[in-house]
Amino acid sequence: MKYSVLGKIMAVVGCAFCLTLSNSGFAAEQPANEDTQVKKKVILDTDMVEMFDDGIAMMMLMKNPEIDLLGIVTVTGNTWANDGMAYLVRQLKELKNLDTTATLAIGAQYPNRKAGGFSKDILKHELNTYGDVMAGYIGAATTENPKSWQEAYRNHYNEDAPDVKVRTDGVDYLIEMVHKYPHQITIAAIGPATNIALAVQKDPEFADLVDEIVYMGGAFWVKGNADEAAEFNIWLDPESAKIAYRAPFDNSTFVALDVTDNTIMNRERYQKIRDSIKNQDLLKLFDKAFFVQQFQKNEKQNFSWFVWDIIVSAIIIDPSLVTSTRYAYIDCVTEKGPQYGKTVPYIKDNAPAGTKPASIILSVDQERFWPMLYNLLSKL
Ligand code: BDR
Ligand code: CA
Image 1: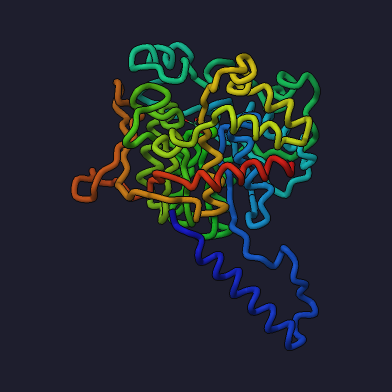
Image 2: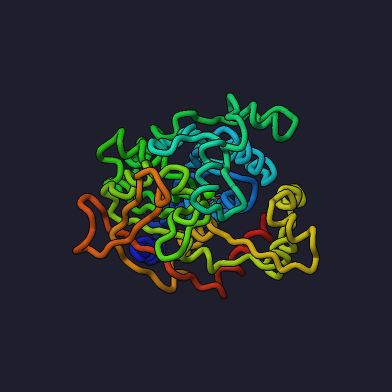
């Protein structure tokens, strides 16, 4: 992870500069408000769901005063890109934030998945054969792709979608933004890498213009959570992952299962989270989540779930949460078979041609991470 030391220094230097100016009487037209801070520019690339955990990852970035969330682009993964946009807009409505300054855009509708194919039957067959880990979870492929995000909204909420501006060219939006803000944007990529790979293929300058990309994805020294070999985001689109990981990003960071497997939602944490949510509309969405229902069905069970995408937002906001990291050259298996979608780390001397180095987060400060989450939820 590239620590945003420069950003912090700029903010401090900027403030010191303001003080000097204000002391000398030059600052009269430059009020020292939030807008004068150097904020980290972030674009969220997400297979959005209600609340946990893409939704919460979005809220963390949207509500943090040090983050300028430029845009949110949906991708098919947990949900179809259209469904994801419907969930996103609904959460903005519940947050009373439909007038957000963030651009909303729908990205790729279908994963690349050349060697595998993308249908309910194919995905189920792979899980049955290669070792199902998350109770047969296949995300978007469970349902039909809705024709539009508005149709998805009507399906989910039984009412018409609010009138908000949504672009349908999410990949072009990503490209436009990195040219507008060269070397300034952090991409939080918390779904399959489809949009990122398409942007890389469409614009040879794209990767080089990004400041940092932080993926939720991969399982390097632990087993997968889709099948035995692969983590879900990668498993759904290994070909795109391979393209993205080989692109010349200056700073690539992975929040993989290696860290998320140790970030466990137990009953105590679930309860604290539930108690923290004061917004009753969001609480209704929270109560629909699979893991919440597991806790609620059996009061005695300390059923454990994980959080994934939220860690990406947390370390973008506060890189000092990271307590250990390993550096490796990254590849992704794209051959059909039991290893399809496996992320493989290499030392430099053994790295296949074309692979690029990245930081793999191994642990985060749990003592600070969870309170950060409770605190955010209490303010929504
Ligand atoms: C990842 O897959 C999705 O289900 C989650 O949103 C997360 O991005 C975890 O493997
Ligand atoms: Ca996700």
